Length: 272
Length: 243
Image (cartoon, rainbow over all chains, first blue to last red; front, side, top):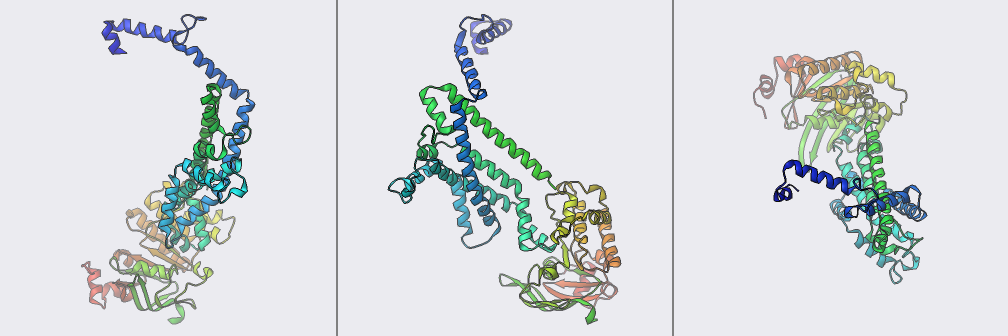
């Protein structure tokens, strides 16, 4: 900007005036009612429409949001039920092959979701080993895929949190009279903040995932369409208002989840 | 004397990965006494405490505690709950100071322990920190909380593993006063592992000198520091390098 002004030979005062005027023009303040420069009106209109869709609870939007929450919520529940005990067990117990199990969990944490979608697709396709379930292109398939994506994350973070607790704590607690189970409970309690982080990270990963759910769910309207797949579709159709609204809701959900995590972390740390 | 022995250790050994770190032919610990265990690093002092607290079983030999014999296996939880240890590094739970102190009583199913917690914290001079977070304490304060946490359960035997190592003189003095008081007023049997021979002299009734996992000498405090029987004990008391 400054280089351009220097090329034109403008004084600093003239430069300041020029760019201030451009800014006012951009926001259509100088000539209200006339088409402004740069197509800003269109963008502002789009934003207003987006906000309208959210505020007025557009039925299409609400349906997709509810379905997303149902599918991801169920997947999160199953992942938590499997992931937390598995992570805690790997963090607490010493057994042959533990390192291999830990390596597998860490690999699962970084596994590309779309590849998991492909595996689930092959598993549930008519000729696949679980084809008789007829789950392909149903919410069940999406829950299964999301659970497989999510549980290694929860197990891995839980394991890391448990491993982060001082290894001498168990002996200290047993010296105070704790049984094996009481000591284990106290160690898990010490790792509680990490466990909460694992659940929120798991939720974040599946609510925003698109590849796997697109593959196994098929993005069928009124049946398997969720926030992420709907954004892809609406963008392709040129419905940027709805795509943006869906995107904002997704961002909002992610923000609320993280906010809840922070609150919970604070309460857990301060809990007696 | 035998009737008063809380512990009797006979032919006790402890080995890790085939390496013997403790080998005690015989050692009696009397009821109500304050026994100091001194010796250089690697002498087996902390291992001895772990065996006395029944956190680990001996590899061979037996430990008799008030009629209960522990050889290859550990005694029941109820027996183990009569004994507790304060370790050199106070590991406190990520809770308030009061919750940490109450922990041992909660393990035993006791409720409504506020008064006991307050009394225990008062004993170590930390009443004002009851509601503080344990993570915010200084090293000396944390060790005093660890001591209060151990004392609240009124153990029959209190094992102290270098409880004042790395602490400033104020905290050392405070902890020593509490140890003496508990030993005198509650008749708690105390086994104190320490590197500090002066501390052993100040506090102990009897002193055990250990070297390379073996008991070299056990004497009353006067004999130990006045006329030790073993040349290695004499050298250790003089401050010579013994290893």
